[in-house]
Image 1 (cartoon, rainbow, N blue to C red):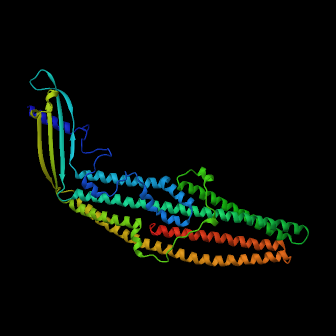
Image 2: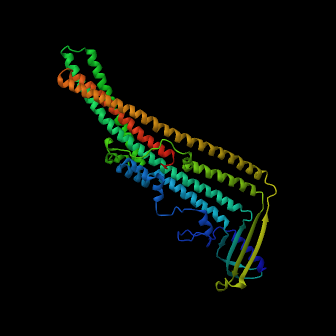
Image 3: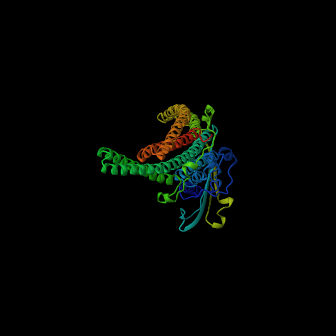
Length: 466
């Protein structure tokens, strides 16, 4: 009778949810990682060094702009950008998910302690008792199904690392592009203010000449319209400038309220000295994070198909149960009060309503879809690199022609300056020529920054490996 009660008590205790799990898990960082797991995971995200993040963005390439302020802002974005923090945390999530899956390959051990107060049959008294149940369960991974599941989850972890790298490259590119566009607007706004001042002078001269009957009212109105248009353009440029500053603040993890504290290198001092290749080997595609992630996803899909096939195989489990049961606490863990069992079991599902067949077909279809996405990623990568190279080449050619035009405008202005000094043309004529020169200077600033942004586009398209 005591054996029956003990077995019943053991079963009830094992079914309870309050039993702690001992030794199988340890949340302390000092726990030694199993050798098998060390070979499975290349890098723990618990590491203190963030050097790999700077390697992601290839800081040496950004030094080609010879702008310490730009480099400082990129460093600040790496440290403070919230999208990057979320990308890093996502890697940590996948890393811990990999560890959780790996735990399924290890034995599961549980133990508990339960005092009880009971009355035995044919006894008129109630007595205290103490039970300590424990169990060990291990699924023998004879067909390596759990190992494959861990490998599949590991591919997601590795893919998340490439997502993290892509995020860092993208944010660094956005910081560089926004920074250069702010520098461009600073220069263009400066030139536009000069144009507005010139148009104000033109309007004042036309207004005075109109009062003297030297010019028509229509010409005066036309000058006034040009002045208003110039002022409108200036306001639009200032609006774009403020909006870019706000976006820039978010990129570097700062408040938009602090944009007045930001300092940018003047346009005339920025000098890109890097070597931009005229052609790039197709092998560079293999270094893009999106391509590498797509490759990992194909590998994971292949493993998922293999796991789905292994679901048709039986599972083998080893289970050990022990119960120490005594009426006195002093003898609770003696061999005389121990009840134990060791069992092995083999389980093969016979009929599951077609679930396993459907799951296998699902994983095969998923594999084919991911494979097609991999092919598309490859073509898209080639397209983006080629587009970036074309933009660099043609914008350079366009810039060269614009510089020729700017030299001609400057020569024309110098010539008219001499004519004005000689008294052969009016001040109004000279002002109009100077406005043409300022307009072409705006175009030069615009296209020069466009060329630098093209370099950043090429940098991004090759995964920062320039």
